[in-house]
Length: 223
Image: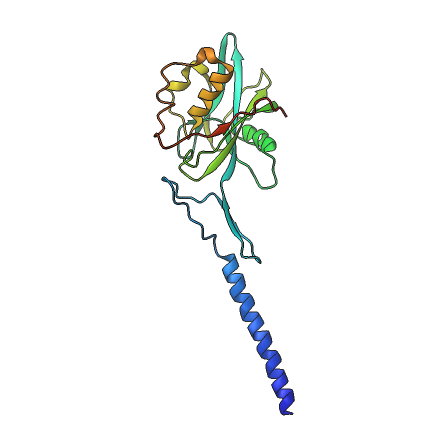
């Protein structure tokens, strides 16, 4: 009888230890990612996740897209910019974050339609902008596309865009533009429309000397 009780107690003890271990393991695994951003004025981490069972935690930059939409009106070349409804409330290139399970190309098509109601007929890879300080909200890497739309299409503000405007390229430097989008547009002008590049681009090059804008130009790759 005593041996049976001892066996039952041992089994109960093993089950209890296993249950407590599971609770502790699950609680630790479900905690928020412990990694903290320690650079610049960035207060958000980016995209962080922890594995539920292997306790593996990783923090990576958030992936975004930006769409340069060019329009030709007579001899004047213009691009489509949005005026942001949310902070920072400035001009910006249409774009947004890539959803989980979505390609960057599909994200570009979706974001452009959500913000401007324009439908993209084709797009071309322009570059990657990945400076950790390019977006004060979080570390964000942006994949930039050059987009083509129907010439008769008319933009209309939607989603988080307060307004959509068609801006001549020669007016870009006079605008208050969010993030590093002025740098992106200056790179675009220098590559495709150097006749609109200005010598006085001190605003564009006003980044602190210890901050570098890193991007790669793969514009020969087409989708």
